[in-house]
Length: 174
Length: 114
Image (cartoon, rainbow over all chains, first blue to last red):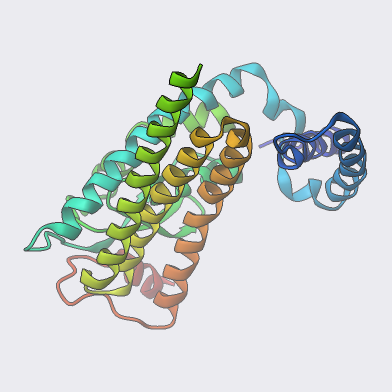
């Protein structure tokens, strides 16, 4: 988790904010003059916002935008969406089943991820995938509320819960 | 051209319908689950996919809005789980008990170790 130069981190924040701004100001039927006006105001505010927040946004700065990381991030999207659809069918099953098949509990798993952004991404993914919800992260320990506990052992529960997310996130963030 | 638009319209309404169905499931889940943590589970998952699906459907109805709805969907994806886990942790720290038939509570053990 080595530190990167301030300029690189600042530029990274600036680029991300500018892209989001460009998409947000776009609306159907807007004409070019208005778009350019809004865009230039947006540039100024992106500079201000980036100056205020670049320290918190990233550790690696521009290296986050390397093509290899972006490719892995894109490859992660279908994996994640599929897990999310399964999660919702699972929720549907448990909610609509007359006997309400749940066996809840809080389990502990461990992760190899070091980068804070990576840990957050893993926690979010866990929350949105079948039957699990992250409650607390302490260092490398995740406390997870599991709606149907299959295993209380750290390693085995980790295999069930993390699936193959960790592999992808390691490539994206480490 | 008009047939393509018609197909997109139909697809859009299908997605909006699926999304509404999951939102309905989330509210049924809120009523049926026994404790706050299980309720949070159904509520977070089903509302997130429900909202994503509705947004995607709206994007399909008028393709010009697609970039905007994808950005909104991304923000929901980033924030909804964070909110859920903050709420769950807050209720745990506030002393709300797990459901009586829960099988394991490793978090309590952690606190006792401290």
